[in-house]
Image (cartoon, rainbow, N blue to C red; front, side, top):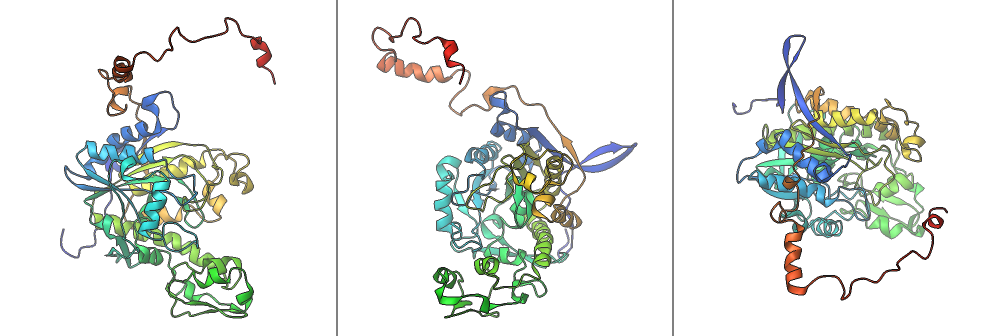
Length: 468
């Protein structure tokens, strides 16, 4: 490819025939969440889809492969169970890749966010079950101790962004498999593969950049400020607000809050007074939040180009489909039932497939879907729940050539070979009885001498126990 050329990559193309014409369409592979035995478990289905989607073609033997996931905020319970990510790690290794599980530090969007530094994130990840032992490979925070380790990525054709800041640990990898939890999101409308790349692969300044917090038109510096609405030092949260800004742009006075507009770096640290105390005017909020959906598409497209064509694959678990992100300190009820697992080499197509399938699902009663009036099949679930279009980000990404809105959904049969998915030490010649026999040989039978003692007949008729 000539130096400096502006090539738009379209990934995972495969020919299909329509009306006698050969056209190109991205394939998205899918298996539902129903369980009937070992081979139909979610981890086993993910491993089967890994192969069906050809994700092993993203890397070669000995290649370093970043397995990108979200390991959950402190006290969040909706994040992906570790075994679901471990299943993908094992497939990478099986095909000769050298995997590491990774994510990035967060911006200080929450005063009590537990992933703002590498150390805090690793502690939180361990509490949530993500360690080198459980993953079978290193767990690495890709943007370093304070989120400063990154690579600048040019996006000359971006709709809003002209650059991005990709976490160095991801940029230095030879390939990446993006393991996403499909769900709603308060800012991004929905969370899936694109957000997992655009935000999840950004360093700290990359996140500020994508969130447009210093944008000259809609950035937070341009919002009106009403420091007089703060009651000042008498507020019980005065110390919290004082310590929430890492560059000291917020100062609590006796009867007001002062903000150094020029010193502000747009780090999210002032969200508490922004949303709770009416100190910042929100007249630009809708513009900002809408354009943020576009900038995510810019960043994700730029990062895929930086990784190189064909170097990134996608596995998406559409389970525990809560209305908000795994970044929250808890998880609301799922708004629709579990759908299953998707896999593709097209970032846009896999998200569109999940969104369209979600729209066909009925909402669950007693959830935010009911509260927002999107219970019927065919309604755009996340557009209704969040209040902004769920199609903005996929459209932006598609316009930059990072994937296709049109796709072919492929539903392969579930494997019948249990041996392929059982624990690595178990097999036809070494089932559980093989190992337990060694214990019997050493310690004898588990039965007590003379056998167990039972009542010959029950002391209460069974029928009496069947009714409340």
